[in-house]
Length: 336
Figure 1 (cartoon, rainbow, N blue to C red):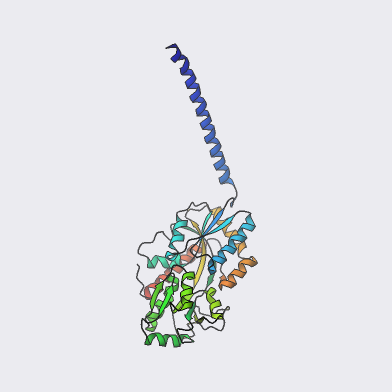
Figure 2: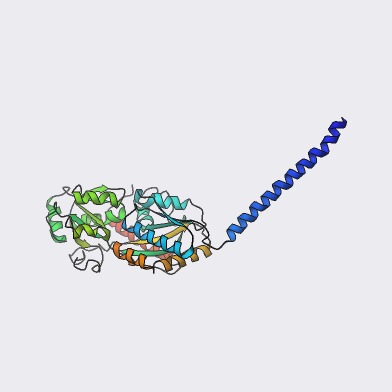
């Protein structure tokens, strides 16, 4: 009994000491967390998530931006490629990320303006799951055809050939952005072509060059194949000719209406990102696009600088989504 009474205070003191150590440890951890959160943004690795394959035109553009931001801030930046599923994989990954500003989605407009109309069940909410930051680039698409398989030199000759041979020729696409112009042509011009979906443009382009598919709408980065003679470009989806290919007529000039279907690239954070972080990221992106390396990437990709003031992307996205919805429904595309 005496031994038990003697040891009880010792055990009590030992427990108190342990509790004090634990409390101190928690206090240090909380202080460290508060200190980290108080650090100016950015203070650690920034990950840019993109739905493009490595080496594709938009991927090269984003990597140039990432390098410029790294030089500007002194923090490490990386690009995380998540291609496939029409940009869904990349968008979904960022929607689930912490909203601290260190996971940034840079994607084409399809993720926010096209996918809501072509997927019955989308794995993310294009409005509620994201904080818009700014647009970065915009550009038209070009219709490329296999120069050996299609003996035509302009839009009129192509449409005549396709009308005479329904379902004989095929087109490749990676998302609704590349599919929509063909659907517009099918609805308005009385043609029928076979659609072949691809995970990425890097996968589709070799098949177009080799003749596995006959045509494809995509961006200017495929132009070197035109220069080499393996592909032929016959039209641009814009209301005015492209300064990168001024000899190429628009579909409007060829008498085809409703083909003003371009694309834009935007930067987004997960929902509820802090306003100061959004403003700082907007500032970093605004400075980055002025760098010579980024300007060279714009030109190589055949796109134009398209930077919006802070806060304007929300309204712009809503307007674009409405316009795309109208075109998609008119083209007869049903959600899948």
